[in-house]
Amino acid sequence: MKSANPNLAQAAVSLDPDDWEQFRALGHRMLDDMVDYLQTVRDRPVWESPPDTARRALQAGLPRESSSIEDVYELFRKNILPYPTGNIHPRFWGWVMGTGTPIGMLSDLLASAMNCHVAGYDQAATLVERQVTGWLAEMLDFPSAASGLLVSGGTVANLIGVATARNQLTGTNVRQVGVNPSDTGKLTIYGSSATHGWAERSCDLLGLGSDGFRKVPVDRHHRIQIDELVRILREDRRRGYRPLCIVGNAGTVAIGATDDLNALADLAAAESLWFHVDGAFGALAKLSPKYRHLVDGLERADSLAFDLHKWGYLQYETGAILIRDAKRHEEAFSFAPSYLENFTGGISVDPTEFASRGIQLSRAFRALRVWMNVSVYGANKLGAAIERNIEDSQYLSSQIDAHPGLELLAPAAMNVVCFRVAPAGRTEAELDALNMRVLVRIQESGIAVPSSARIDGRFAIRVAHTNHRTIRADFDVLLASVLEIATQILHAETAG
Ligand SMILES: Cc1ncc(COP(=O)(O)O)c(C=O)c1O
Image (cartoon, rainbow, N blue to C red; front, side):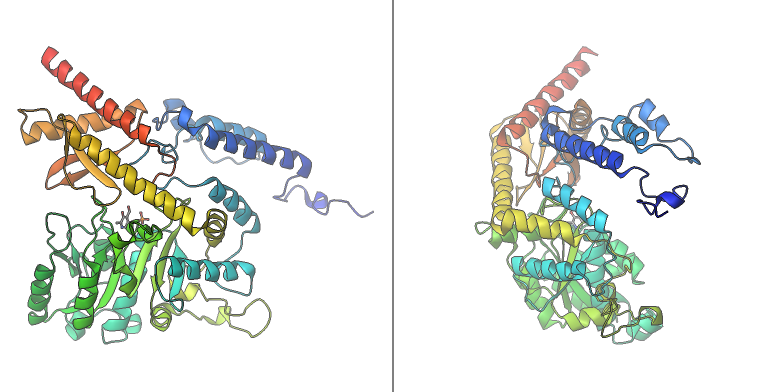
């Protein structure tokens, strides 16, 4: 007799549920729970360190036998769900972490059910990634013929940009023969001292050595000093180095500063160098008609790296790279092994289309979350949210400026505000120590999570605002709490 459920015959080894209806009911409950979780996020502490019970539970050894999904879900609810980094909360502004969107959550469920392998192939997921990389190019004023790829994040996106420069401009077939400074001279990349750490890591990985990243000093607004860049470039050429690429920043990690990208584009063209822009979060300012001028010139880059899991508000991991010249991109990463042969029919039509633009062969369907998010919200609404973040950062900055006990440590260039509590009569070392304690205490209070930066050596409490849930009153809460905690610390000091 034929079984109604073909899996029943092999129930002992099937990884599908024995009872789909029970599975469906639990799935519905999980979805309800997660919608509640998002809806009530404001009612919980921003962050809480996992207690010993959770730590112990998460050190349990390998389960050899099966458990029910209901029991495992309970473990998740008890030991995992309550202890996130906190970046979905309206008062989280640490590092540059995105908030995620409810649409992103749902699209991850759909993408996970489909579980497409997006190296290429003739499938809808490939069409979606092509479509969304086209949309991203349009958002950022890149030509429609540019080549795009979604990656895990800004670090990998930037690596791909500068790897394309290396593979194109060394003058030897570096992909085959490797980097040999005695043939080419020392290969070098130029960017400001405010550039994120991806640059040195990339130089290290690309065989240039981390000191192949030549750090150029910044001005008082943290923008690269172009005359210094020119001087260092000339000096390096004289020494026999082989400069490959200039890196511009659209939003530096510490304070959100943007280099003079037009001047860098001109210089790169005059010096026959690749122009790469790290727009990890800043690039998305292009979506705001009012503030797009802040990142003027990024559209002239040969390669542009940015993240949608920062100011695109999307879930991790969603980074992207755009490369103006699609042919150069493909030459830098083409990949066509015999086991991935290209046919004119069947599924293997261009099976490595995206694998030939980066370093991953197996790739997830992250394009779906971009597609759903942009389709549902529309580029204008995303731009309006970015505009609000910038104006709320200006509000925070003006509140700090107006308070005698607080001090701005850098101009709020875009959406990053660096400040400190500054009671009179304290040395720099005392102010650093006080502000460090305030930062840790405010994080531990669960009220808000800013992070830190060193601005010209001084310890700053840093707010990087890419949070679509924040309202201005949240910044009032932040400042009131910072001042209250500082007062408590200072009182305890005098009392002690
Ligand atoms: C300016 C900048 N570039 C690059 C990165 C690295 O991006 P990711 O963490 O997505 O790898 C960051 C991360 O915060 C950043 O702020």
